[in-house]
Amino acid sequence: MVITKIETFVLKDKLSKSFFFSQWEYSERCICIVKVTAKDGTYGWGEGYGPASVLEAGIKLLEPFVIGQNALENEVIWNKMYRKTLDFARRGILVASMSAIDIAIWDLKGKLLGLPVSTLLGGAHRDRIRPYATGLYFTDHKNPAKTFKEEAELYISQGFKAMKMKVGLGIKEDVNNVKFMREIIGPDIQLMVDSNHAYTLREATELARKIEKYDISWFEEPLSPEFYDQYSELRQKTTIPISGGECEYLRFGFKQLIESKSVDIIQPDICASGGLTEAKRIGALASANGVDIIPHTWGTAIGLHVALHFISNIESVPGRMYQPDFLMEYDQTENGLRDKLCFPSIEMKNGMIEVPKRPGLGIDINEKVLHKYASRVKEVDIEVLQKIYKVK
Ligand SMILES: [Mg+2]
Image 1 (cartoon, rainbow, N blue to C red):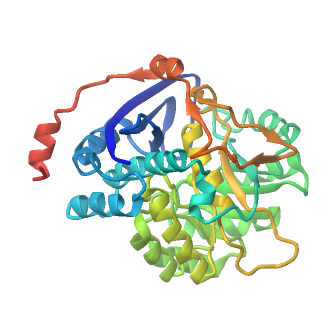
Image 2: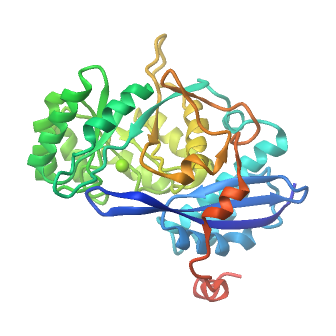
């Protein structure tokens, strides 16, 4: 079935209250989603992770290599997009644009075949996934952890058994906050920390050692993603598992991350690192090297459903009778684009989310809501971009 149309939407949601982490402050959510339509009118939705207006320009650039292709041949289309961008974008935003299109094609393919994405991936080893709450950002510069208690108690009441908090403000403050959090949630809730690459090796080592006693399930992005060797050194200096990979791209980037023994857990963002087609290959790499994989998510319910289907298909290595839960990142910060755009909405029951059995990703977009959030910030001159990148 031939692909005939690609449409992009840059969506913005102004937050009622801004929040911050070690790098910057968020006052709005801005996300680029894409709709890919086939000749018979069937369509699929995709999402990219990264600056939305640049992502949109990248999708426009890739459009000529996707229009006219067979929607069932996602690997062939993926390779065409990859070959056309390889010289300029072995990492970064153009890979995210490719990812958005690739995801929409998987959704479209599932709808054309009447099969859920998990089946297209090879089948669901598990039909319910345990989400962990991502939140516990900072809301007040004078008292950054002001809302931690209220937020953590809310997550527990909602049924979450694991949550991830932000660190990266400075070692002393981080240690106090982690201690405070462990006291609030007690010993039975899993706790993770994420510094968003805020620290040097010396600082990260000191922080890790000081919070080991609070039973931390993983320390995410302790260091800059460029410092593979330092990650590996840090792993030798702490008992806390080290995770990273949300800034990494394609199987080649993850090969480097894994071969340098930098992390215990890789966290590819499927909406940035190459889409579902490449996530399957990254998953095979993780499996072949005995490294855990827990995708990064941050966006709309499209991205969350991508993760749900993908995680349902991850093979347990090693296998055993009583398997631990495979975790899915579930951002809980304010985001109308996550909560209002797609239907049916995500439901958590007894701390688990069901993997939809409906065709494709199992969701659709409420186009009324879509147009409420859609913005045209600035039309990008695609012809100029195509000349710069020398593509026809
Ligand atoms: Mg993170």
